[in-house]
Image 1 (cartoon, one colour):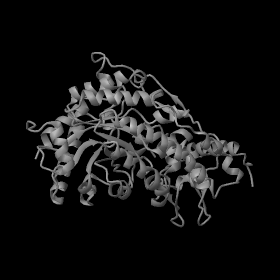
Image 2 (cartoon, rainbow over the protein chains, first blue to last red):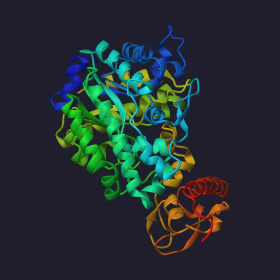
Image 3 (cartoon, each protein chain N blue to C red):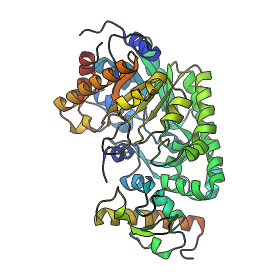
Image 4 (cartoon, rainbow over the protein chains, first blue to last red):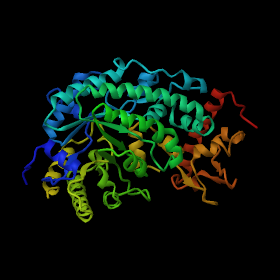
Length: 363
Length: 104
């Protein structure tokens, strides 16, 4: 079936629960788009993550090639930690990660300082977002991507260390969270000037596997995230949240934080991990546009036939659940987490998800 | 041990061992829910075995000691050894950084 709405019209209809021609689709394809640059020869991850023009160009080329309904400017999750002073291992073609944390003692939590966000990869992220948001303005709904304060701290300190200190020295953690929150505030204000329509937060630790309600509330949701979410709205951006947890804090992050879009994952091997239809049936899609939940590994390991079948099944599951709930198109067919930016990731599988949604996701 | 969640966390820079050490499970004896890192922080604190790749965990509530492979995310001796060595390194560095003595 041919699309009868533009991407922006469809996205707005999905966000406001108006009738749409089909479900929206956005496999979270970010770093993998760099394979489309250089006349299809691709560029290295290192070049992509250090040059705002290349960063932005990848999203523009990705939009032309795949025809998504949204564009979300995720780079990776070591941007803030790297600019806070942690050493980031930057391979040519792999997602970078922190290999030497900046925090090695309790005093180090207090020594954290907000960096100059115009320098380092924070500056690349903001400038790159500005370029692609302007290039895609009016064509799709665009959003920047930012790490939440607790995630930035866990990357800077090492997750195990941060958790041990949360148990034994919570005041030190709060001091550091104050700094990462100020860093986030600077970033939000800068994103607000880029022209992107929304800002997507990664609140990774809102996960019952790791933190209960009280702990998550104390160390992120109640104080720090609440302030940052409000600032996001004050800066004119729609609040979006991405959380690929196995047992996400849906009440905290959907009901209380009230984002416009909530992106989540589903893990069939983990008891209690919420499926798309369960999430809709429990009323979370009443409150926001829920996005998910295709297994990201399928984009590397799956065949085109397999991922097409998975997408088709998800479209039908979601449409049935939305119909039962009396909703229109309040679900976006997406990957549960970023499509792996691996050199072996199959672009034809990303294309297949979009094409199958255009066909099977129509109303 | 390896499933989609571990893959997703690995893509974000958290190793399989890091994810396993932070993920809560129920004590097989009393049902108390805690993570391996929580056990090492409290119930195993000060025990010198925790710094010698100890393959066991101690529940902070019922004080029962059990093998790591009795938890749902660790399935065999190889994984158990792998994770115990990983946590040992974390705890050893933490104690050195904090100036804690390696025994009670």
